[in-house]
Structures are given as C-alpha cells and as structure tokens.
Length: 321
Image (cartoon, rainbow, N blue to C red; front, top):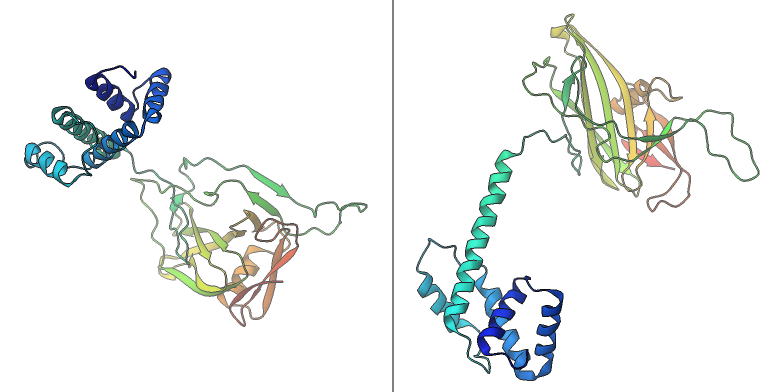
C-alpha cells in the first residue's frame, strides 16, 4: 500500500470511512496511517471533511456546487497532499443520498406501525387509563409471577404458620398494563377520582388499583389505574367511582403496591389477609387511622432488609417502617 498512487489510497480510505473494507484492507489503512506524521494528518483531514459533509443539506435543495465550495473554504487547513475535489464532492453527495434514503425508509416504517402499544405507567403521580370489557379477549401476554404465600424459611427455623399477604415479584414492567380495545363500545363511568398521598419512603412506589363495574344489567367492565409516587413526594392515586345515575355497582378487585427499584410487589385482594377493599377505604378516608399493607423483604438496593408498608391516612402518608 505504501507504493500505491494517491487515487488508489483515496479510494481505499473512502471505503474505510464508509466501513466497506475487508479485515486485511482495514489493517493496511491503519498501517499506512501509522507509517508517518504526514499520512496521519492527511487521514485526519480527510476524515474531518467527510464527517462535516454528512449533515449537509439533502440533494434537491440549494446549490450543491456552492454548498461544497462553502464547506471547503471553512474546513481545516489543507493537508500535506492535495485531495481531489471531485472525489470528495461525489462522496458528500452520495452520503446525502444515503441519508435521504434512510430517512424515507424510517418514516415509511413509522407510518405502518399499528397503534396497539399497551398502556404504561408514568412517573410523578401520573396515571394510565386502560378500560376494556371482560367479555372481549385482551391481547396482552400474562407476565410470569413468582408468588410466595408464606414467609421464606430462615436458617435453623421452620416456616411460619401465620399467613402474610401474598407477595409477588414482578418480572415484567407492564404487569398491570392492558391494551385498550378499539371499536368496542365502552360503558361510560363517572369521572375518575383521585386521592393525594405522600410516599414517605426512600424508594419510588407504584400503586395500581383494579376495579370491576356492572351498570344497568350490562356486561361487566374492568378498569386498572396505576400511579407512581416518587420518594418523599406527594402524588395522586387515581381510581373510578360508581355512577348512581347509571345504577352502577363497583368493586375493588385488587391493589398492588410495588417497589419500583426492585420489582417486589404486595398484592391485596380477597384472598390476602389485608383485603383490597379495606386498604381502599383507608386510602379514600372512609375509614380513619392506619392500616398495614404488608412487608417488603428487601430495600431499594435489593439488599435483604424487612420493611413494613403502612398507610396512615391521618397524615396522608405511605409509611415505611
């Protein structure tokens, strides 16, 4: 390669910059650049001009000749060897064509994507609002859960006979998310309500409330709202209430309290020691005082430390004990 003419070197360097060289050719370029200071300066100048030429205006807009002359005039000082203007101009235009083709393909693919993304929770007390009919199939994969109905065994001790709340470790960030069915008439409910609550723990906490409604003899409708509360900050926990004007009956089917950093989840339902309805009544202030929701078996950094989660509605706090 040391004896190649300038045009052969430029052609090889161009293919090197566009990542089209073989392994052997790549080694030849690297050896040639390292052979002398002039070669290194020549390559760096060529690389600089190539990189600067990429974001230039796409073909079809403006004057390519004038744009190239402006680029050449503002580039770094000339390298030891003269770079043929025609070849670099062709490379810049080729790069522009490739960029245009890539952008066209990208936007074409974007317009073909169906809008079927599952709802996801949003930080800072925001809320998802998926609603669907239980009579319709919901195309959401059921995430795998690791459930423990008893306290884990400790060294030298048997399992505790007292049954704590069911704990589940979430292995999918979209555990409570459901896809809103399109072209399916939904039963209207009353406006979504919210409760202000403070997360008085050092970890982000997600609270998801799953409800069922039965209105005027129509088919059952289910809703699930998830809200994330940041550490030591107040936020809003959202839910739906029944609409007396529509003769709606509602139930609190499940409440999940998840430590976001570790995925550990306390699940409250009709089978847990602490019922979902009882926790909900304290959350809304229907019952005064405090209620213990359950226990996390790790801290924010997933270390083995038992922490009890308690809701104290006299202060409006979700307390970690």
